[in-house]
View 1 (cartoon, one colour):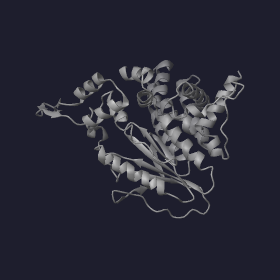
View 2: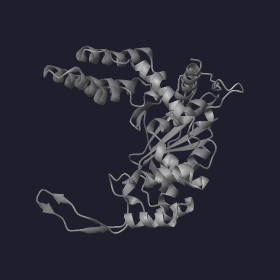
View 3: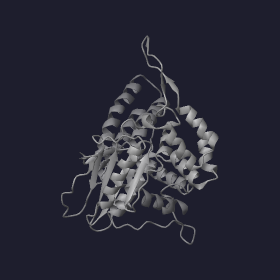
View 4: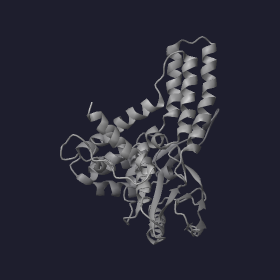
Length: 370
């Protein structure tokens, strides 16, 4: 609660933006921001994108309290708050219990406690100064997930490769260990005459190149299609339909069946739906909706369609973004001089047109006329 108030009411602009972003960002925000940058860049000729999904070894366990406190002071947090955080992170007694056995006590003064509500926020503030140095590169961060996006034009990868080198150097300075074996690279290239691209090396280790990657729970493919993601979702949802049938056999009433559906099936079908549903193929939408129809027959009451859920969530997310000036997509929502509609994003391809931000603006405009 303290950090929410600090982010909202902080007297220093830097502190406010850093804390509010660390608190408010959702996976959908990170994915939508990255994809919009990728798809917008691919509108240009002779362009492609390299996405580096960075993996750290035990990121939360490697935070150095003294380094963190220096960064919090730089951000303008009160000295008493910084002292409280340092006291919280240092000299922590820890034991391990396994059955009747209890280990001896060890005192830890490195890292942030796993499972602690404060840990993701502290880590986000710890890494706030890891930022891109070139206009054609982005660094998307969500908790301990870091993605470097290189927007390449005419085959010039110098800035992207320099950004990766600087990230590796920053990690060394801040006691974060890059796990090159688990770090993956995905290349999005729609050029007709694309050539073999040189591999990327980090600390003399070659980064593995993949066709798909699970980015914050969503499978992203090199062709920016969502078939593989939807196949994985449908497969898991069909497995959970089995448990819904079992619950019906035990004569549970419709309200309990509906609760199970919403918590375990609908939540799966609609995870980050604003990011991918607008761009998925018609056949994939049919597959998704068939799961809903099956659940509807089992429960015996009508269920909202995925299209309705997608539209309502687009509207809800758009409404939240226009209220939050620290959101990375805030500037995409600009009112026309009439003040009655938002300016639509110019697009050349259906890939960009059907992505979140253009769709959200269209949905918001249609709602304003009602």
